[in-house]
Length: 191
Image (cartoon, rainbow, N blue to C red; front, side, top):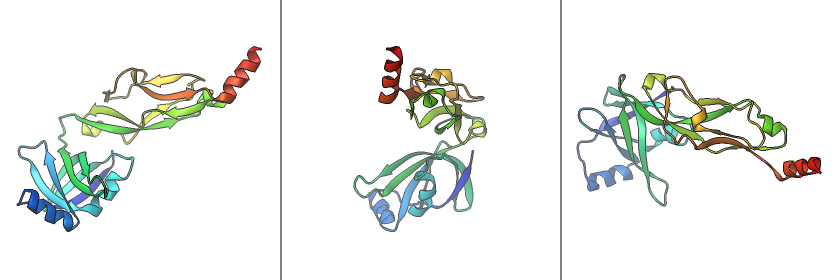
């Protein structure tokens, strides 16, 4: 899994008044959970563009006043109108403890159903997985070469090494749907 670094400084003052003044300076209040104590810090709002506005998932090395913490971005809160980042939560990653994270799905191949006139639909862009941080891939690669017309691939049909999929087993990940043209061609062939 790819890593990315964010630099921050420790927050000494907590509360609504200090948080409001930080946001007016273009800084985002953040917290790192999962350690012995929670670590409150601030980082520049520009630092978050490279991890929030992308479909990729990263291990975020948070550098707080010289101390680096390996984390994953757990949650973000945005202003309801301005689309300004208000708060970010990070989860500390430990070598021996599995983490739960959503990983993007990448489709490989050319489905048989698409060749026959169907339309490919990716129903789930990300799947929730549980694994150790060292086993997390950048993407979940799914081969769709054998996916026929009108067929679906569900979470229960997928398996990845050292990963546990947490989505419902009957949830559809990818499907090849019949188009009107394909239905008309099938009806003409039947007549």
